[in-house]
Figure 1 (cartoon, one colour):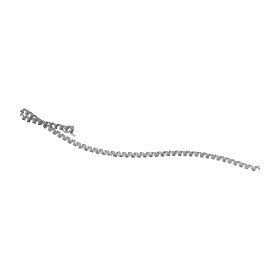
Figure 2 (cartoon, helix red, strand yellow; figure 1 turned 180 degrees about the horizontal axis):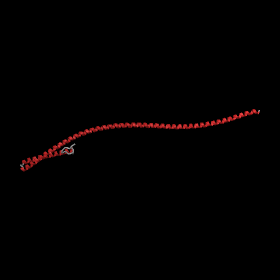
Figure 3 (cartoon, one colour; figure 1 turned 90 degrees about the vertical axis):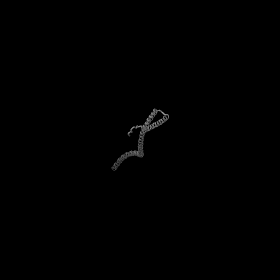
Figure 4 (cartoon, rainbow, N blue to C red; figure 1 turned 120 degrees about the vertical axis):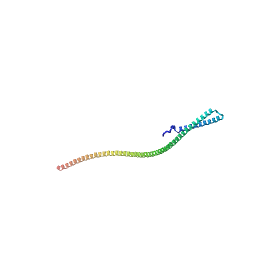
Amino acid sequence: MATPLGWSQGGSGSVCLAFDQLRDVIESQEELIHQLRNVMVLQDENFVSKEEFQAVEKKLVEEKAAHAKTKALLAKEEEKLQFALGEVEVLSKQLEKEKLAFEKALSSVKSRALQETSKKDQLITKCNEIESHIIKQEDILNGKENEIKELQQVISQQKQIFRNHVSDYRIQKQQENYMAQVLDQKHKKASGMRQARSHQRPREK
């Protein structure tokens, strides 16, 4: 904003200070004028000389001129003060408006932040539930895997036992076949000997 003519940027505080100082000067000047008038009255009563009267009268005129000048300056300062107060009022209204807008925006941001926080908490809770479910499923799978391994070991042992049984059975079967062959050979040999003896007996007769 542009600075008015004769106006310093010290703010309304410096203007008020200057205004008070000018008012004090005016009051002092008015008091001095009053005293001079009293002196003139006393001089009239005491029949002062013309030269003294003219000197006092000249001083009175000078004081009146200074007083008028001071009043004019005071009027200008009052105008500046009113202008500054007007600017302050405008700025105050603008500041209040901006403050309300900021508070509204802040409230909206806080509301969105709370909503986002609630959504985040819900997501975290859901993720924790899913993670817990996955851990339980992994525990179940690990248990199943252990059961499968145990079953595989049992099956492997059963297979080995079966192989051993089969091997024993084959050995036993081979032994039985061998014994059968031996017995069969003995039986044939014995049968042949009996036939030979039966043929020899008729010849002897």
